[in-house]
Image (cartoon, rainbow, N blue to C red; front, side, top):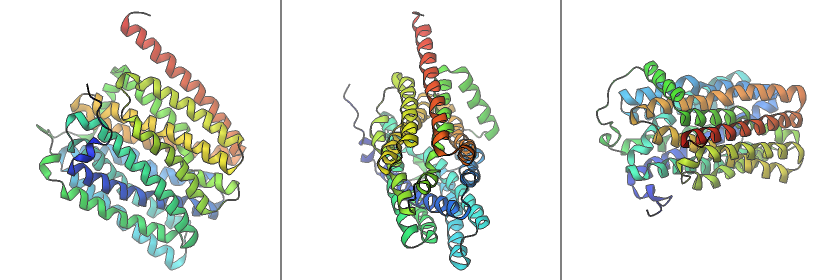
Length: 407
């Protein structure tokens, strides 16, 4: 069989529309994340406060994403994407107005960033549902991989831009840029014909029922269980570091612009890996996911012990590689390898866990850093990751031997 080219989905016009819209929105979101995180840490001096912001913002996806995924079954996902984009844009513009009027206040910052993330989560869930629907079946896996390319490319550009804008213009300008970034999302989804994103033989269902069916499928499938276990481990223990980058930068006496560069290193690693992760065969996903956890452990040791800008940049780059491996491989398992009728409920669960785990992890890691310091906290996490990778490897080997009758 001829190898399917990674960029093949870009041949399809509707995928190009959604690709560009998602890219623009992600750039704006990361500009705002860098600005908000840096300003909050400068004002409060507390890593735990960043954990609280992550809980209020990223954590909103725990509730919002499964609901939005359910809405996409009962309603046109394009409409859901527009509604979410409008909510997010309005919150960004209001935060910009208040920040420029009377300066940044912690309460206002947390409230409006929370509302913006709620809208963003709604729009992201809808866009994530649309992406595989606008390409033929033989290119769906590559479409998922390319969506990761768009997201990670945007993280690089958004992180650097957000840091520079915050340093030279001010955080409110980064918030305004995020609001404007939702305009391409609205345009891109409305250009796509409704017939393209309509499910064949779609049936109305309750969100809660879909969640129950998805959880049952995870419990009964060894492959799904392994995918979600590795996914949760990484996003609970490692993913929070991307929101705590202001702590690393400030601890080293760096500016907001350097926060952007460190964030870009993390995103750059994910970007490089996203060109390859969509091409990893299904049979190798569990093994590669365990390797990703081990790589993350080594990178956490690097951030802790290599107390230099170059060491931080390199370590964060490898953490980004591990991030994309875990995210893309699990998403492919959920959307493409599971039964078609379960793909949307499982996608909602996937997105919810992708927000729940780093939310809890940010709170825990932020508290650990405040109490024990940055370096000690990261070393503890690295040890846990090594044991998690070993457990995943052993579990996968046992399952393989049992399936082939060689154990």
